[in-house]
Length: 189
Ligand SMILES: *[C@@H]1O[C@H](CO)[C@@H](O)[C@H](O)[C@H]1NC(C)=O
Ligand SMILES: *[C@@H]1O[C@H](CO)[C@@H](O)[C@H](O)[C@H]1NC(C)=O
Ligand SMILES: *[C@@H]1O[C@H](CO)[C@@H](O)[C@H](O)[C@H]1NC(C)=O
Ligand SMILES: *[C@@H]1O[C@H](CO)[C@@H](O)[C@H](O)[C@H]1NC(C)=O
Image 1 (cartoon, rainbow, N blue to C red):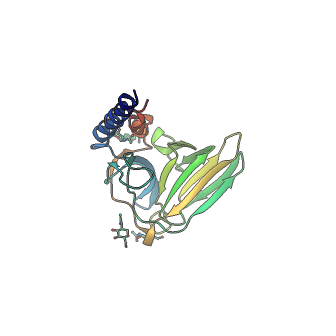
Image 2: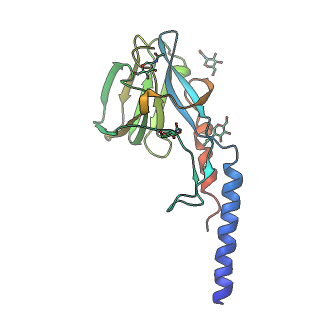
């Protein structure tokens, strides 16, 4: 009985690993980026060059992780419900991970769907802000229209580096483009 159970566990672990390995292959994180073109901020959907791999790090070994590059400093910001961040440029090239609430980024003068990104805090809340003042004259507007506070973690990159990426298209990433990670959750049970 014992042996069957433990064999079963090993079998399930192997199946899980196989599923994750297969799902990992060629799966890359896509993030909405606030970039700049011709001196003005634009929204783009970026696909990271470094794909998910099966981690060998203690504690997460066997799960999928993507290396996103070197960073420096960390700021935890709490924005009250209804806060209006106004028009501004990115202070630095940085990741912003929204972990709670809602942020709406708009590009002044672009009323098309390409000009608005709605980011919900949580598992799909990571964006990259790269419209620094040397590349964007006016910047973008960020509002926090939720009924709760919004929490964002700002993570500037080391030496202001922009992570290697491919621009998938103009405008924010679609739901389809950010939910591919859900496939990495299968295989347990
Ligand atoms: C991060 O920094 C280390 C040490 O300087 C370097 O070896 C590594 O290549 C850097 N990683 C990336 C993704 O740039
Ligand atoms: C703009 O400034 C940022 C730092 O704020 C820097 O990392 C980036 O390389 C600069 N870009 C250009 C095109 O000069
Ligand atoms: C939005 O961006 C797409 C490319 O992703 C482009 O084909 C389309 O023309 C843009 N729409 C507007 C209104 O600018
Ligand atoms: C990124 O976008 C591609 C489509 O270009 C999609 O196949 C993939 O699942 C997306 N990745 C994630 C992690 O959602």
